[in-house]
Length: 331
View: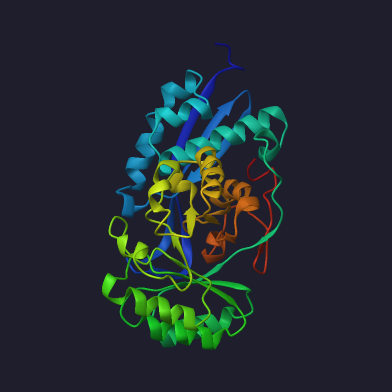
């Protein structure tokens, strides 16, 4: 193999401080810990970023090791197609999948959407997240963001009807979506859904724990309910049809853009609405996800807006509008 054909893989852990803190039902954090993969060939480099998620048993160190373990396969000609069987879905495969697509687009002189035969993304309104806190604190945070057209409200169990009522009062014009992050129970499910409906909420994400969400099929849902922790890739879609109206596609769950696009196609064929979501991360994580936005009813790609600083050449945000990436960032 000549030097011009030599393919190398590098990976590293990076940390980005969050502006303040980010709090959901499972806890709070003050920094985004990401893992970046870089695949290089012939003077060109493709990059991908992922966020290991403890909810799924992932750690930055284990994710880094999983990516580094693919060095021999990458040097031997691993492609994004063969990657799908070579690694399980999850954060590590996401970073490597997106890096391979970025490199392939760079080598072909094409934008990633042209390379993949997908519609070119355009600017979209992204949700902006309000962290879980007391009703008073959430109302205060919401008041500062009330000018944004779409707010995502983190809820967490006891007191959620009071929280969502306080948020609605602070932002009477905004569209609201709610994310309970598995914190509700069968006992409070219907009362909490009713409180959200009364507040004019459009969508509730993952009210019940994954694997214990059968009650959603037994009740009359007064508003749309979206699967997040209950859905990962195409294989997990079909069993959810009676319980959920929408699915949240995140590249860190699907294991990359390749599976995310296929999953979006499959979800639409099954009648699900689509949310394209994210972990708290930099624009390098958001950029590939922009390719799913043409199919999405809801776009939740506000990760960089929650950071104290983004990486260089980050996505352009104009208020709540997020724009497709420049080639200097990705794709």
